[in-house]
Structure formats: structure tokens, C-alpha cells
Length: 183
Image 1 (cartoon, helix red, strand yellow):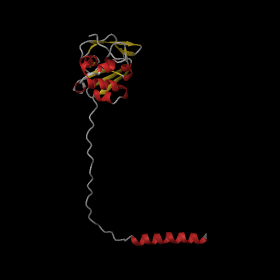
Image 2 (tube, one colour):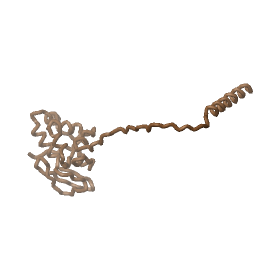
Image 3 (tube, one colour):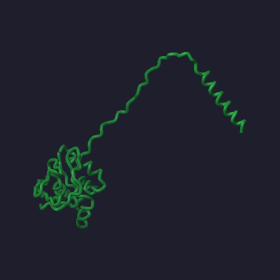
Image 4 (cartoon, helix red, strand yellow):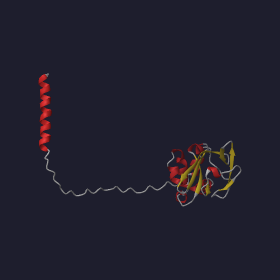
């Protein structure tokens, strides 16, 4: 045991002497070239538009498929501003069997476009801007009726389940039903 302690002390002493001997007391000045730091250029992230907001939601895949089938993606990516009352996948599933599949067919494009534009209002209408009994004109041409009871907002009887999802070109309000126009 004593032999191990002497070995360790000898190793520590030898290391210390070596370090001191290597440390030359002369100070040399050497010219160094400044290191060039390369900065990574990151492109600014464009804010999401209302279509991107819907695309980013797992609850709106049917709506995204419908908007795509109707050829409305570019329109809704436009300058706007727009307000979209966005039905969830569950809302589309609540429609009679075969309705969604039928609407997604190319021959139903005009009818699908009418239904989807019935969910869109010109301008960015925030939840706080909505008043009980208010009528808002849709891009389809008909009006939607706002009802507010006990602080709950409804659009033509559909409950607003999430409000004021901001996009760069408008606002999205999630609703629990698909709104069907009269015409």
C-alpha cells in the first residue's frame, strides 16, 4: 500500500516538474490571423396563411382535400383577408354516407366550390367582432347568422370550437358542422 502511495506521489511530482519545465518564461508575440466566423444564413420563415393553418391541423384533412379538389388553394392563399369557418373531419363525417366522396368527384366541383365558399367571409373577422344576430355575407353570396348564447358562439347553428387562429391573410374559426347553402 505504501509503495502505491509513493508511486502516485512520484507520478504527480514528475508531471508537475514537466509542466513547469515546459512553461518557458519568455513571452513571444506571434501574429495571428483573425478567425473568420461564418454565419449561417437562415431564410426568414414566412407566416402561415389560412390554408397552411388548415394543412397544419390533423383535424382538417378532409377540409384540405375538399379545398384542393375545388381548386381553391391559390384563392385562399391570396392576399385576403379572409375569415374561414373551418369544419373538422368529424363534421364532414357527420354528413350522410357518401356525401363527401360524391363532392370530391371532379363532376361535383361547382357544388363543392359553392359549399366551401359558403364557409368564407371577406375580411378578418375576429370572435370579438361577432355580435348576436349578426349576418355576415359569404364569398358564395349567401349570409351566415351569428348566434351568441351564454358566451358560446354559433354560426348557422354550428358551434365555434376554436376561434381566432391567425394566418397571414386572415383568421380561421373551427366549427363542428359543415354549413350547407340554400342554393
